[in-house]
Image (cartoon, rainbow, N blue to C red; front, side, top):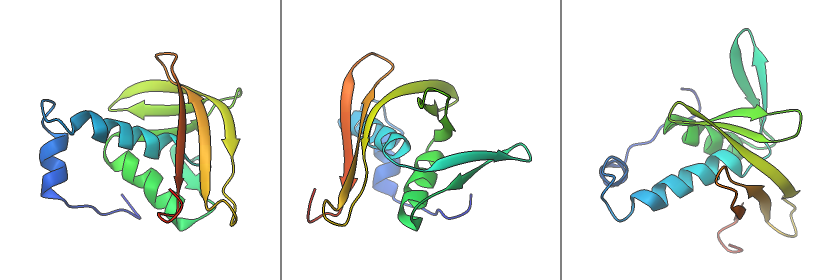
Length: 128
């Protein structure tokens, strides 16, 4: 995979052990990376290519993909299509509050597959 490299034995240990207390947090984090962004996916020659407004967004989406949270795009209803470890998953996009230099963060509001409404936000560490 291009634009991504990651090695952390502690993360790997927690992510590979479903009984670890941190396991669910990691799943939520990876879901967040796969959902909370404005990346556009385009299919070219049978491959999905990403267009991102910043290299940081591209790196985060590629990071999620590396761990099995593959952003496949948005459908005609603007739902977020994510393949999580081989299983197609749909998040209904309810609203996006775009990143701005004043806010220094972006936010999405989604309905999860289990019908929960979640607010996901990412941004500068001094703001979050």
